Image (tube, rainbow, N blue to C red; front, side):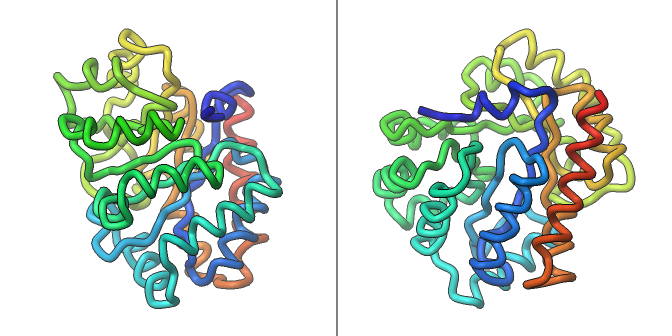
Length: 258
């Protein structure tokens, strides 16, 4: 049974993303524990992939570092199993369709259920092709989390009406990465979403400051941050967990004031 709804029950959710295995799996594990301690409501775990098409240079580089360090999908599953012994907040995988296909879709989702993964985000999976995965995600009790982008326009209502877990609203065109300002009319997208589903929605892509997080969560049910966290890990390496925890606390504190 997915725990994702629990992430949104105590006010606005803060959802950090981390690339597993950058610079190593022990550091990832320590960072996740610090993020939970600092108030993260749900964690997105990136499974490294050689061609992460939705990612900007910061997360692309993290994928390369993790793969070069020998991180595999099996090792990421083992990491989640270890984390689940200590933390109970929702955790979701963010990766690419090819990672799941090459592992074997049925086997991948069975492992997700086994280790306690609550959801799966595949940014390169078109809405029209999600049925290829749905039978397996439903069987495993894992939510297949949909994304809505500024370009989705006429499809927003359709995507929202079938959403599971939470709806990931992409705030900016292009790839992930911090932005100095977010110009998309996120409020208008959220209005359409609200008319078509009761599922919570959170905004990601481009958020890096407490002010941006507060603004985006003001429109929606939460804020998602990846590149800014990955950049801290890139800078501090094995010494990054405490710094990541400090950053997450700042972001979560900003959302508590909404």
